[in-house]
Image (tube, rainbow, N blue to C red):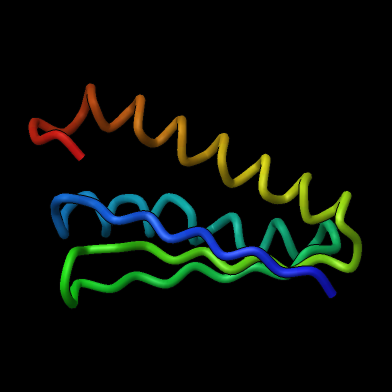
Length: 87
């Protein structure tokens, strides 16, 4: 099993909660595609979201990472329009 961890630190708890809420539904969709993933949210220290991805092959891990990185990029673009504070 291959594993990757992505940790995203944000400037505000509001932004971290919004990111967590937007990524959480994707966990179940990833399971249907043969990946295992989890998303955790922490407000201790700097607010952060932690994403754990596990896949049976490197190519599947890369595909899952690409999906999560696209979602993170989309979140950053959308949040700049919606939230008044910079994440």
